[in-house]
Image (tube, rainbow, N blue to C red):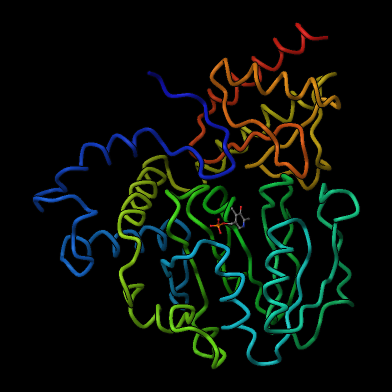
Length: 360
Ligand SMILES: *Cc1c(COP(=O)(O)O)cnc(C)c1O
């Protein structure tokens, strides 16, 4: 058996070093005499794990002291309801940019509780670009301004953040968290499901400015109230203990690589290898306008559905798996998250060149 190059959009590949470390510690963690899964979340051993994980998030992302770091459950999708319930209780209004399915889902959920003002949308061209924003459309009295920063399905990214002035900017960074240096202080809140770039499914990282906590709607379920989780150090109830443990190992791996700035360089190198090829190929074409390209999710097509299917099948046989594009876009998508090594992308491009030569 050998490990394949896994281009899955999520859950996605984890660094092999992390899996090996977890394997080595699986049955007995340190001197605990048990696995992390079997420990009380109130034990000293586990406290060190969750506190260590939070400290690494703060260190790697340079999180200012007036932000809380929370480990929540229910996936990124639960945030689509938690955000309006907790942040939208002043003027009951938010602004949002529709850049794909995840933004659409966030908007639909927010509409159940507050007024949602859609500032712009790129639905007209299958979300293949980030719309230019007209600041005169921004609501002066919005409680927050919402974006999905990296659009996992369509492969676009806000390479420039909207200037929202005093209105807190809230961003879904599920698929680009810790892939590049971000200035947390520019945001009111950031959140990310772990299963793309941070660890296994089951834990959602939330980074939220303290002044945005404590004004939840009365209807907010206890488990959906940021204040409850902030006051209890993400331990109001049993947190997803094992997922947080793996996240901590992933963060240690990032730190060992030199931190997020170093990871960003590698990610840019990987993306360049793939985009340079797509820009020069006669068979394969990227689907996103150049200035809005994501360095994490790279959709591409041949323009011929049969050929796409043939490519996906041949690639799988050669050990490059999960390259089939999302059903709404078709074609292919290579997700090249932090754990994908440069060699994986270079090998994929070599394979694409060979396929192109053989199928021209
Ligand atoms: C995967 C993803 C989600 C959904 O995450 P879940 O944890 O499955 O709810 C939301 N937003 C983005 C940008 C994603 O990539």
